[in-house]
Image 1 (cartoon, rainbow, N blue to C red):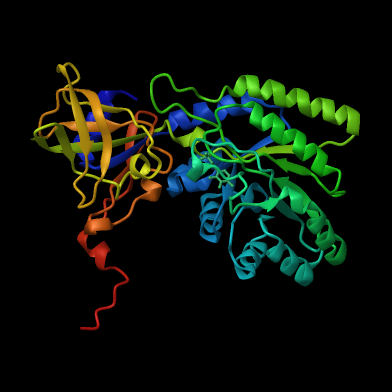
Image 2 (cartoon, helix red, strand yellow):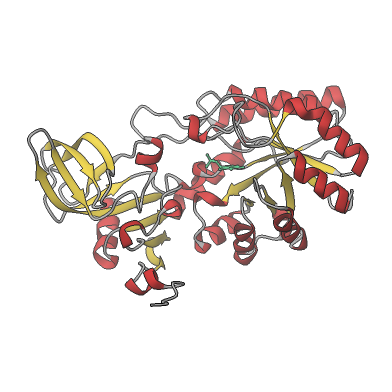
Length: 399
Ligand SMILES: *Cc1c(COP(=O)(O)O)cnc(C)c1O
């Protein structure tokens, strides 16, 4: 899709608006499937972007779905994923939520000893489960998105293997899969191989094991000079490691991955309008009709999004600090070279498909943006912009 397409969408649907070019999702998915062996499955991590149309599109591609809440499971079923193509990977939920997932007959991943025990005492081996292991590999772009480190709340520590075995022995739980997800944006792909070796060792303790789920961590480039995980080369290495393990152990496991941002980040373009150009003593601010209520990644993770002025692509480059219109410090970017911005210009944030709309809120009583899907050269509105009444929905007036 071109910048002209984006400008036309801004004109037709207004700003702020998230635009998803689903062709890019298909390309990313095909990169994965062509790099790994046929006996590999990809579970799209729904939490990156859950618009039902995106879920349906990903389902049609043939992917499976990784869900972190019971509502994501229900959305997945509604989008057409069959129950055997859904994995429920919650953390810190109660047994009731796990039981609800059981009633929907999806794969279930348990991430702490307490629930493992409760589950085993109540259901024994009647319902096969996954166990989420924390291998204590430090990986991930930053502390907030790294989940494998020693202080992380995620998974059951690899040092508690004996405890897992005790629970298995005394309650007969049937472990069909092992899972690890060490974090997002892993820079060094050898971390996956290190994780895989740990999985192979652990596998020997689980006689009914069928699946090894390596989670995600696939990196995408956010700025010039950033790299995307080289899935071709990773695929080769992983395939070789699996083959070697099959030959030496005689055991065959299906490999699962859970890419979120790898599939949808690049597809997303977030369009806003420049409201005000504000020159202060030291800085030229571009104030846009958005803020961290719509795109929080720059403020929450210090993450970088390429910002371009679509309305004046040939204008001279100037240095701007791009901020939102929220009564909080909501700086999208400091000191960016952007083609001269005039009030009213349409500004785009690239790579906004993952954790963009999904983390938006109504802070400052502002409305959540619209979403548009660009499919086969056509723009489809897939979520209306919030309206004023939405702010009052669910509120109960007692005065
Ligand atoms: C968030 C998450 C993912 C996806 O991570 P990305 O960096 O978006 O690919 C995969 N698995 C689990 C369990 C997650 O929590």
